[in-house]
Figure 1 (cartoon, rainbow, N blue to C red):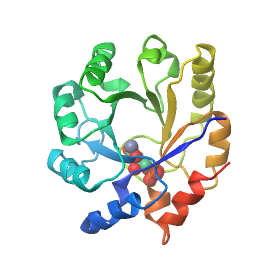
Figure 2: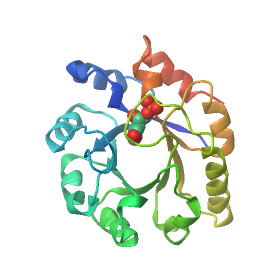
Figure 3: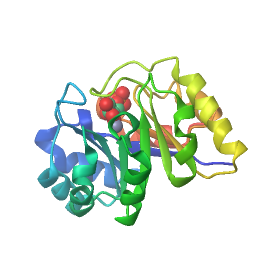
Figure 4: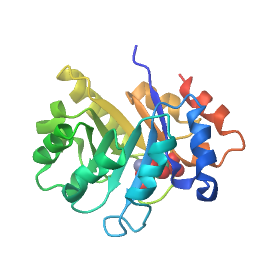
Length: 218
Ligand code: DX5
Ligand code: ZN
């Protein structure tokens, strides 16, 4: 049986007390820490850059899963590695030479993942699926935390799970956006391995309990 993982996203954390939020994640049952990098061009929002990632890296006991929502990510792959990224996700829609980008991420010593927007079909990843550690199916439009899960994601998840099973690969399926204690069970059943969870964790009065509940969901 596959076991699923929880990657908290600090997008909606309290940035005035970021060290406390990271300490909470350190002491939780979370598997990795998910960082959302936005450039205000590819998505209509901006987040943070290399110095902040470096500082988070210095106190995080969990490896870093860095989700790039930026145009031309190829320009910065090495910088993200140097800042502390362990896993690096690029968007399919931003990479004209996706195969080359994936190879470069691996050469740099990171685990490569590719993300698909809600309107991008999973079949497009067929040629590179075997080169990836993980596929991220965006279950909201990238840019903001706290949005509602897009129902059309179900078909994409099931289709991707079938592609991975048919080819006997161990590529992980990650979802990001609108994951709650109510829908996680059905998502596990549909074949999701990795859950990015922001708002459900950071808007709670008891984030440690929420992470534990998500982690033991069935
Ligand atoms: C959205 C980001 C997500 C976000 C998760 O572009 O990629 O990681 O923080 O969102 P919620 O708050 O829906 O869990
Ligand atoms: Zn994300």
